[in-house]
Image 1 (tube, rainbow, N blue to C red):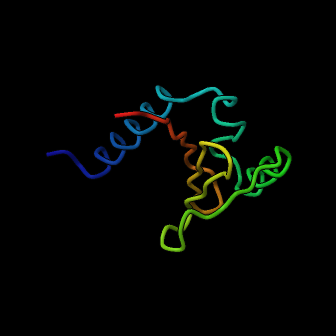
Image 2 (cartoon, rainbow, N blue to C red):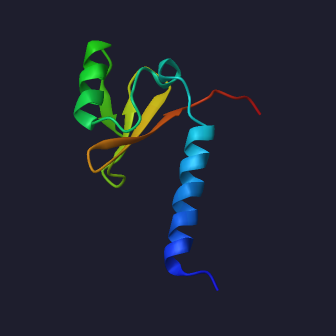
Length: 90
């Protein structure tokens, strides 16, 4: 039986390893810094003449950057995820 402490360690380590393995160059993220403050993200968007808009009132923390294919997920005022929508044709 795995002790709860060891289990949480394994889960945390797995998530960290997956994050590092899939980390992208900051330029590929529109210049947004993962783990950076939401305030810094807002400032960066302002400097690029981009507008951060909440995706929905029902999805707190989800933000889209108008006129780009980028979106942010913010948790506790920290940028937790930067996503890029890719256009496809099926």
